Image (cartoon, rainbow, N blue to C red; front, side):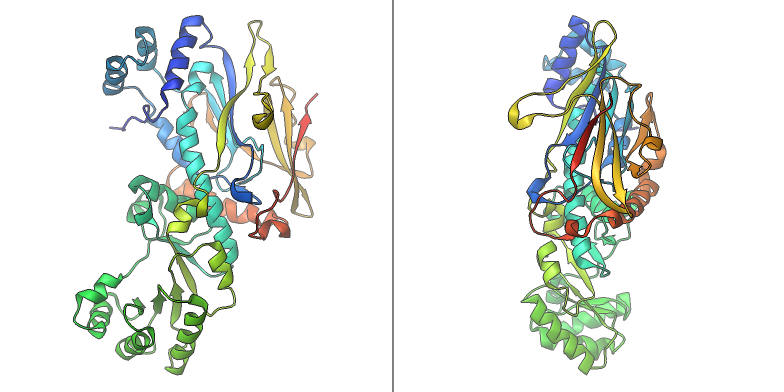
Length: 441
């Protein structure tokens, strides 16, 4: 039985629904859009993540007996609304940027079309998923760029809520990480898992050597030994004496990492363990990873920073009504007009303008109606950015599960190659490319 996701919702969505049912506007055709007015933290690009999870959660967006009882007992909505929600199924359409795609301020990341009643109740679910996952993916992509060809492992489950940890592992994998320590993420999304032993393993045994011998007996000489529980130099000596020069790797989780890594590499080479890999952990973020670029490090493990968006745990996305039909059946664009939160009304088509394969701008074509939007053929120098996820209530399964996750990862690594060089810098700045809005008329 599918667990209902219908109450992962803010109350005002249902009170608006109730009022719309009362005044007759609930069935009015509407277009909602999920977008970000700005990139959090002065980032130069954002990464879309969470769409596959959202589609799976949408399947469970049903109001069963327990959910309806809660709404009735707490006087959230009236009887007419309860009757409507009892039979609620999303019957509209959803299109938007693929997972792994880059986005910029004003990019129409997700477009939800249907009746007002169909679409308004999805606001909190869509935002909670995409705001979290996109924040993690954006941070992870920056770390992946800083790491270059060196592999990254996500190991931040203990720094996040239990389900957020699983979602974060998925988002990090989409954005370039190669493995996760989280087993549920491995099972649910097909992400490679990794992990050997913590300091507690060494402390459990009478000596460091005893702990190393036991680990190797269990996992083989290709394992990675944690060498900084006591003295690092002694730990490395012990590791090679026990495992031999064919030891797979050592992990360093403390100290001044650039200095320690260089010392450990020199020591390993002196001992003849020239192929033994060095993995570093210890509160890494994109800046620390970049600082280690010239160090003899083979792999990184990142925890707290990646699962918290490296200081920006939300992508600051919003979900707004941008178009609706008036009583005569004509489409009109609508938008909030306040100075600091102004947005662009109207239905949109988005293209990334490329010059010699390098992104130059985000072109967003805006129309009040549904027939005037440009087609990809009209933007031969651009790449169409939107695809259909849900058509008249039917969810495309290609974007879900392990296959959808793998596809999103491949898409991200491909489109990241379009970024101009200035986008790869870690310092705060304006978005790497401008967003240009064009009136379809």
